[in-house]
Length: 202
Image (cartoon, rainbow, N blue to C red; front, side, top):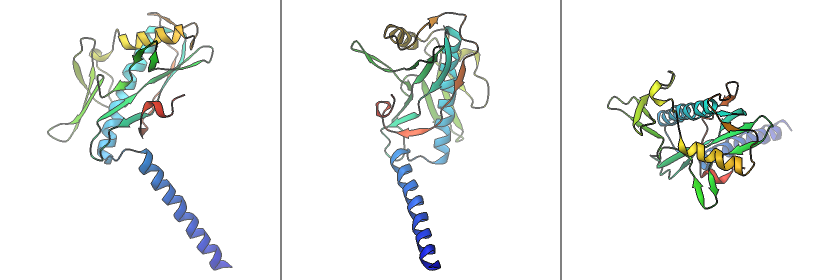
């Protein structure tokens, strides 16, 4: 009886670890720990830039959070694209997800194409750059405050997306204003996930 229990227990452990391994292989990008850190650090700073802009330029926002970092075009050694979208909650508890299409207009996600540059420098140190109001990219460092140059005073794509969300009545009593939402909570998301943003954001 004891031997049967031991065999059953071993089989159970193998199934659990095997299932976890397969789940991670299917859903997680095949990056080295160093590359994983680079992308998590870069997107954490991008999310801070976007979250700060929303918090400082829109009233009626209760909470700002972010989707996982969706990775597409992973060939096993490099990331062809990775992107994230903000998710906002108004003071009435309504949830609104950025991105997607509206009246034949496609709202963008935010990531390596257009918003963020990631690489390793000559000394294999992280190189992270964020876009400024002028369209230039400025170096930022994970763990340090964002430099003044990357504190955005306008992000047209965010403003256009807010306009759509308001017109669709996804959010209520939210307005563009310099008064902002100083007490809004920002929740960051560093999870890397294979696939498209369209796969699971509802």
